[in-house]
Amino acid sequence: MSNVTVIGAQWGDEGKGKIVDWLASRADIVVRFQGGHNAGHTLVVGDQTYKLSLLPSGLVRGKMGVIGNGVVVDPEALLAEIDRVSAQGLKVTPETLRIAENVPLILPVHGAIDRAREEARGARKIGTTGRGIGPAYEDKVARRAIRLCDLAEPETLDWKLDELLLHHNTLLAGLGAPTFTKAALLEHMNALAPRVLPYMDTVWDLLDDARRAGRRILFEGAQAVMLDVDHGTYPFVTSSNTIAANAATGSGVGPGTVGFVLGIAKAYSTRVGEGPFPSELHDEMGRTLGTRGHEFGTVTGRPRRCGWFDAMLVRRAVRVGGINGLALTKLDVLDGLPEIKVCVGYELDGKEIRSFPSAPAAQARVTPIYETMEGWTDSTRGARSWADLPAQAIKYVRRIEELVEAPVTLLSTSPERDDTILMRDPFEG
Image (cartoon, rainbow, N blue to C red; front, side, top):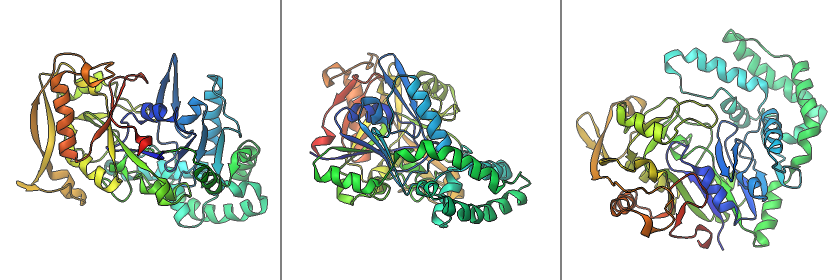
């Protein structure tokens, strides 16, 4: 049996929550390996809807959840999320949730600097959520991060706050924003420590023991490949590596443990926030896709920008993300459209180009090349086998496979967990 790593193949919001939930029922451990509470998964289980940002989705299925060292954790947001889902009847205890001792923490100062810098950018905003994720990752690589294990050592926390505030208060003052006092942050962190520290664990050791025991591990990514800090549409990206290779680094396991890489993609495209979006639709069709797909960000509540499926970008995600198979979601949103377009190439300054450029000015000038396909009149919603799908819908899926150079191994036809068509079991490798 193989482990499975799930990543987004577009700009996030592809419906990973449902797929991870579907897979989690057959896993033993579910691991979050990057991102922070700027990501969100919505899970519909019976008459309950769970909105998760930091908690691994497997907790909903009673599986052990692990937050790896590649995540940045706001302890206040984490505890609020635990309280919220506990009120819905979900059991989250130190027996069901473990957090890496070396996970970097998000402090209130991080959110403040995040929001102040975004405001200072003016018209050049990048669409950050303002929750401090980027500044927390900056502190990690600058070696001044406060990590979960530091909460257990008051003397360490004391001098590390001095170093952190020397940096951030200087920036905040320069931006004309209020600064922070050491006493206030110490009080904040010391109040949270007794509730958070019981979840702390040596996660790399826990996962290695699980691997040696043959337990199934599901690695759960946040955001998506086109938001990867190295391989996405920089600078309009997140602050972490979202590709499958980071599942190993972000949880403390060897690369061979990552297993089968399942990329999640919508049957069309969406994006939240700023940045290039070659196949975006600014017309009635774009609004139709948004309305049918209920396209609003799980975390931000912002309406998502909508457009046709971009096969060029998903093919790039397949290659750099190490994707072995795709889970295609929201096929039913395209039901009844007389024709459907797919972006199959790009032009830049009148010339066809092989791939999306990295330079921001060039990205803004790219125009899509479309292939038009016939739509289907019969509904795909709730289909659970190929036999239930209209012929044109099958043709559309097969064409996507050709263009992105990866097989569609799962097909989701509604938000309901069981409305899923399985072509290949990812846990079988």
